[in-house]
Length: 397
Image 1 (cartoon, rainbow, N blue to C red):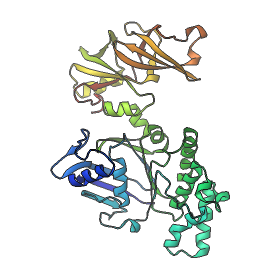
Image 2 (cartoon, rainbow, N blue to C red; image 1 turned 30 degrees about the vertical axis):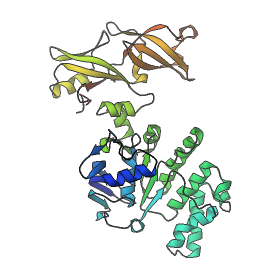
Image 3 (cartoon, helix red, strand yellow; image 1 turned 180 degrees about the vertical axis):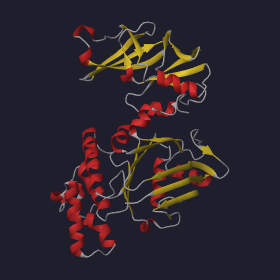
Image 4 (cartoon, rainbow, N blue to C red; image 1 turned 60 degrees about the vertical axis):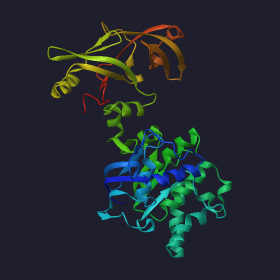
């Protein structure tokens, strides 16, 4: 267990190094990526990253491929040099400390097990390097195996295990020496959907039984929402928002976070915010929607002017119930039966939209068919308003 402090962390890959890496991967070495900053020093992979992690906290870095989340994790592990900034673990500066001396364990995406060793030997390996006495080694290995439910596989080799079992062994090898910090780099991405669900539950149970601080990297926002005490959402090497799963879902600071968190993603529409006396009204697709009083108050506190906005509404927050003066019409493109709900894909004013309707709210004859015209509106308490120029949430900027 440990506290971790990342202060103004920056990672720059020199241009020559980037070209060499691309050449080895068979890519065009001179191709520029528009989503990353390129300075005279090189390509900025992580820029001004600041984060304080509490003891035994479970932090998740999430974002699209290439956003810098794995690079940040590798800097914590000591596998990447830090260009600028400071990394502290339990108030000790770690920038120049060797990875083996940081008391950190890491679980990789591809398991990284030794194929010629049994499961037991794989688990013993880090303890052997530390010259742990045999009786203590057996105790720690048996405890780790019991926690992860792999005791019956201890004498097998990795090739005789399923993907989920191999990942448990990889996690077991990481926790067997009881590290202060446990790093996980997309550990479930090679598993099928059913196994991912099972392993997510195993990781949740695991963190209750060991005293490590967790940093977990994923591009899967479902993993981020279910696992993390807090989520760090990244884009193009920069932090977009840090918060609990509920905070980033309910109060996204910009359109990127709003669109990235939530499945299916939030619907966006062009709209206008107008003032009528001391109250605000949203005009969108011919409808007029009056935000709730708490939203009105936040807009007034910021002295928000009239402006063109992007209106955001999550699929589960759109309603088909008739509301005078606030209905929008759309044509159904696709209707997906999901069991407990129907996902309706429709076109409204040139915008593709998704509406989630609980099946309990629909009679058999009401199930939408392709081409049907339906009317919908947004729940006033959960409608989001974003600055059209900056993408910032008008309530929380």
